[in-house]
Amino acid sequence: MEKSSSQQAFKAAIIALTLCAVGIILMVIPFHAGLFFMQMVSGILFIISGGIAIAGIIFSIRSVREPNTVKKILALVINFTFAAFFISIIVANILDIKRAIT
Image (cartoon, rainbow, N blue to C red):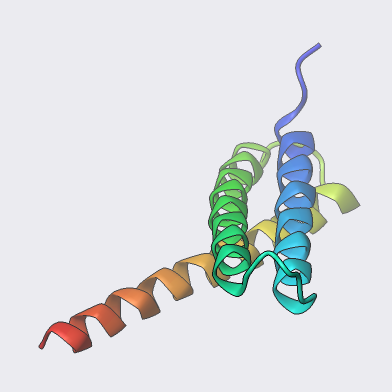
């Protein structure tokens, strides 16, 4: 049985939310493994959660013809928020690189 697009969007939203929460926890809790390593792991988790959120937006757009449910709306809001956050960070980093070069 194939999952509907709204169910896939909701699953993507929960995964992105979980990865972001784990990334924040790894940044906040001091570990003895080293600061650089924890920053790298957190950064990778944030990048993956941004990609999953963008995929979730695509699933949400594909589910436009399905009936509105709480899960569908919640998935759209969470995925859009994380994708906007991810895209704004990418744009800010590109502008910082541009400023550093010129």
